[in-house]
Length: 63
Image (cartoon, rainbow, N blue to C red; front, top):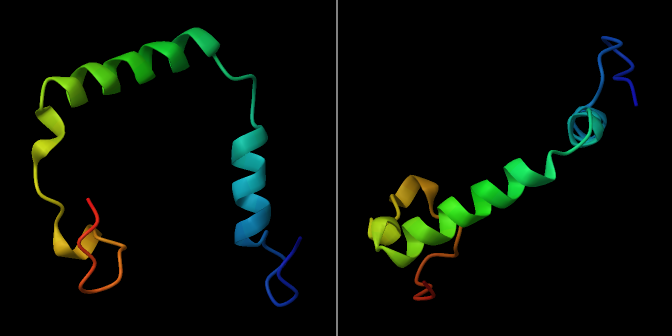
């Protein structure tokens, strides 16, 4: 998918290419998930969300 004016790839094509690039390392993915879960269970993830990073609609009280 190319941008007609510049000939550059569009965002969807770039994202697709990034997702397809190379083989996924299953062991690295398992280690990353285990590290995330360990940090979450230890309470490391308890920091509040910054307002500029919060994608939820205003007034939403969901965690």
